[in-house]
Image (cartoon, rainbow, N blue to C red):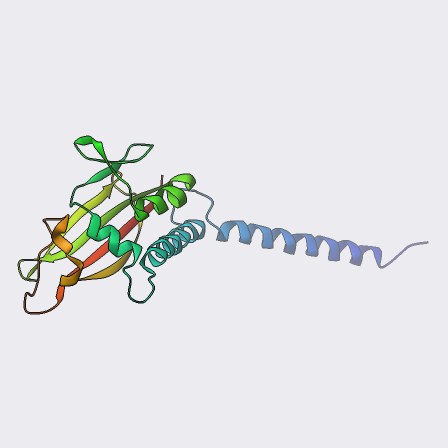
Length: 192
């Protein structure tokens, strides 16, 4: 006895297998397979770094009414010098006996160093009665990669904060007002 439907089932099976093979080839071709190209995975890593950096600066800049934030206190306590990560702590460049220990370095050490995320912190503020900008490195850990992420937070300093008690670089941009200066704290994050 002959089954006349056997050939039709075979053709249907071959057609289904061909369609599945084409779908797999298309899916593999559509995704980037090389780790050196800017792929969706790399964009995902950059997005995670950006959110992490924003969370760090946001947590440090949170304040109760009537008090300074931890980030503002760190800016006020900063002496204007550059610090580098030695693998153990942040040390002043050219002076190995002067470590930087504050809320910012505690967060960076606890969150970023433990995850192997390289980072630097730049501080930018107005000089010459508000006519020009000065950018100074607070923490420097080498040149960032091409896929580095920068997040920032602006801090308003007032005359009542006594801002240049520790930092001679900060100047009063308008002596006729209570506003002393505006400081932009930039956190640069990248994977090594």
